[in-house]
Length: 84
Image (cartoon, rainbow, N blue to C red; front, side, top):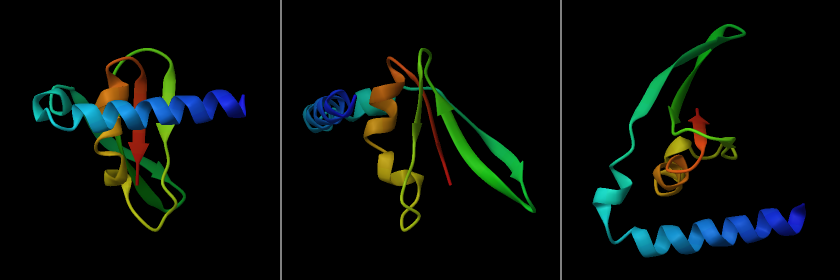
């Protein structure tokens, strides 16, 4: 499982690099946004794509925008959510 995850991440990175030269690919995904109420606050999310679910997490030192290049690419094949 770990090897599959590493290979998947490498493939996404390579695809992101090659497609980052073409902004029309990155801007062609329809994104739903909203808030989810959580213990005394609210959590903003973005959701795009169809297929198996992928949740993009960040370490808390940054925000969801760290996934700006990967988010639309993954949404072409998967249902992807990222949140702050």
